[in-house]
Image (cartoon, rainbow, N blue to C red; front, side, top):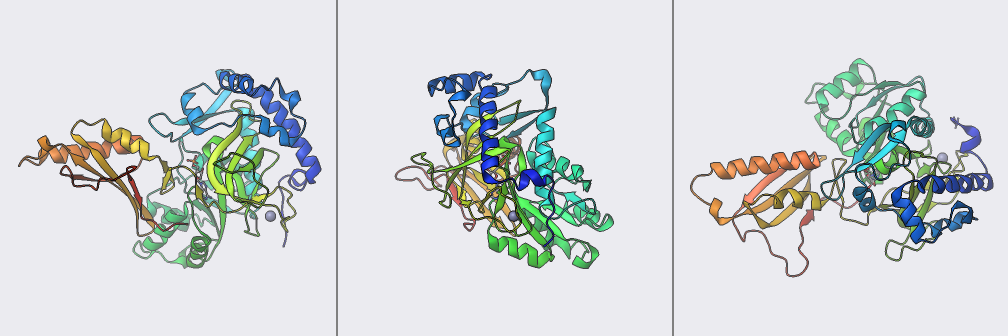
Length: 436
Ligand code: AMP
Ligand code: ZN
């Protein structure tokens, strides 16, 4: 197979040199992190005097972990390691409640991010010949813009379609003969189910590849999309805290995602003991981003479960691969690619005095897409013959949920004592989707 690289020397660097590069970059990253109030305190608590105390990569264990909660507490600018004037972009993702988690990038950080994402795309054989329809949401979420610049950097023709409006997506696919798509796997399946109804057939298009990510999916789902759309589907992993998609990507061999180790240090830990696990064992992925000036992040707990694939890949890249994400160690739900914490929903509901204390969150499949239903009890005062108040309340809950979690939920109101009451710890979430 013909293998193309963006930066062959770096992508195929021998492990010893790559690890020396990582250690050097880690020291610089710690030095940069010390400029933030959060890390100067956290590093002092670990009794780490300075980066010169990092003698080997294993010394990363001397560094503190960082959690999503830490980022939330630092909202809006608490994690900034440069002057605000140097920042050119920010992105945000859901926090567990009200405040989102924010990342910032300098112009140089953006260039570094672009370099890494263009490597990810070329690893699938992409290049100037391709018309790339980017159907991930553009905006605060890193999904859309995350791959955009990498694709442009490779000279691909980029259509910043963003998500939604399936009819328009089909029209663009047809008119511009897009051959590479980027979307959530559930959206691709959903779009396929609408194709005939919208007057299109597969032969109207020129589809060849799709990059899918942002939500857990199985090998079977990949295969299904490949068979239905007759394309190659590549798994793409990323999270906004680490600059979004492009961080780990499958190459043409489609067997695990290369994680760019000159830009990130990965660890797999046991989420309970927080002790490191050997390569090959499944645990929580912990990431340190290297070189990011505006916002260093040390040992960030992704909460994603995976394992390192230590065997070399036939493509010649020496950067190790991670296996398909198995699930999460926290209660974050991913609904059509959007992250939602049950606590965000609770926050919306509990702010309304007309609503009782019991509620239930149900997530299920409706066709290929996810459907969110929020069931809640109302107070007795609302139970009158006049249903207008109930109707208005339902509308208000829907609107507030949409504003908070960016998802249109179905809201069901029930009389008091309708919903089941748990004997022990309340079970507020019923995820009826099949496990990955
Ligand atoms: P966000 O920060 O909004 O981009 O969400 C990042 C989260 O989405 C990750 O921590 C994962 O839980 C999930 N995610 C992203 N890409 C994938 C993927 N390819 N497979 C499974 N889950 C993914
Ligand atoms: Zn490979």
